[in-house]
Image (cartoon, rainbow, N blue to C red):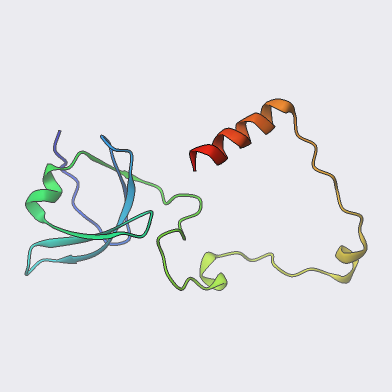
Length: 113
């Protein structure tokens, strides 16, 4: 299956056959190439013909989209609630209680990654 999706800079995509996630970092219309960066950080360049041969879908950015990106500043992540008040330091810690099923799911996720 070929794609009719046009590459868009900063758009995330997923290979339908491989499941790999990547985003487009650059498009060079003069050279007819698309530069992509995989979630693991690998950078690849392909021509438009190769792009259109891929089976792709556009996706939302992964929850932790910082994986392949170098030099991300905390301010770039959009977090707004990072300050703590003095009373936050005096509150007792809350113990996290998880079920056996949740613990098994977390262990499975760790093994997969």
